[in-house]
Image: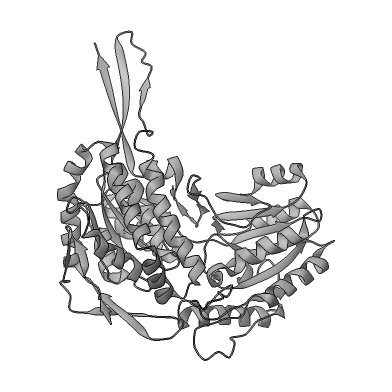
Length: 477
C-alpha cells in the first residue's frame, strides 16, 4: 500500500505527526494509501519555507516563472495515464472524466504561463503638471490553497498556477478524502529544478492542519474550495490577521426551461449536468424550473434519459455515465435528503433508491416531481444525482424562483428567444449563466459566486488578479 510523505521545501519529508489518514477506494471499499495526518508543526515548516523562498521567486521575471509552469504541464502530460488511474482509484470518477481532469490541468498550467507578458499595471493621469502616478501590481506573498475532493487535481492547478506566475510562494492542502493525485504530483515535482520552498504540499485534517494554516499571520491570501461551513470557518479563523480570502463554497444552480426551448438539447444538457461525477459538482444544475405548458412532456423526456444513465465500475472498458458517491457518508446524505423530500410531499418519478450492488456507494439517478420552493431538496445542496422539478407560468416567476436561494454560483436558461435569454442574463443573481448548454466553465472566464457561494473567484484575468495587490507611486519630476 502506498504511503505518501509531505512535500516541504523541495523535498519529500516525514510528518511531525505519527498519525496517518487512510484513503479509501469508494468503488471497492479498500484502503489504497495513507497520507500524513499533519499537524501544526507541519504547517509551520511549510509556511516558513514558502515565506523564505518568496522574495527570490518574486524577483525573477514573470516569463522565467512561467517557464516552470510549462515544465509542470509537461510533467503532467508525461504521466497523464498514471495520474488518471490514481484519480479514479481515490474517488471513483469514471476514467474518461478523470483523464479529462488530468489533461485540462496540464492545459491550465500552460494557459497561465501565457499570461507572463500580458498582465500589467497602469499609469494614471495626475492633477499636477509634472507628476506621474504609477499603479504597480505586486504579489501578495504566501498563498495557502485548500483543495476539495471532487476535482482535486484541477483545483490544485487553479490555486498554484496563477499564484506562482505572479510571484507568490504556495502551500497546498489537499482534501483528506482524495489527496493521492496531488501527492503523486508532489513526488514528480522532486524531479524538477523548481526552487525549494516555492511550492509546498502537505496533508492533514482541516480541523488541525487546515486550522493552523488559516490562523497563521504568514499567508497573504487563503483560497478555499469547499462547503459553506468550511468557508465560514476560514473567515472566522483568518479574521485576527485580516487575511484576504478567496472562497468557492458550492451552489444550488437553477436550470430554467422555457416553452420555446429546444427540448432535446435541454434534456441532454440537464442530464449531463446532473450526473457528471455522480452529481458531485458544485456548479451543475441542482434544481429545475420548467414552463408549465411543457412540463409533462419535458419531464417524460428527462425520466427516460435518467433511466438510461449507466453506473458501475469507473475503470470498466466501456465506461458508465457515472460511478459511486465518494463515500458512504455522501451516499447516506443523498438518500436521507430524498427520503425527507418524499415525506414532505415530493414523489419519485424515477430512481430514488440505493441500488443493490456488490461494491460502491451508489445512488440511483433520481428525478423528483411535486416539489415546492420551500423544500429542503430545493433550497439545500444535494451533491448527488438527484434533480427536483418545479414549474412556472412566466419568465419573471421563473427568475424570481431561481433567485430565491442562499447560493449564487451558476444558473442556466434554455430558450430559442434571444430576448428571453438576455432578459434572464440581466436579472439572474448568479456569478455565471449558461444559455442553451450544460453547466461547465472555461479557464479563460471567471468562476465566481454570489451570496453564500463565495468571495472572489478563479480563472482568466480576474482569477490572476486575486494573487496581486496594488502599489501606487506618486512621482514628481
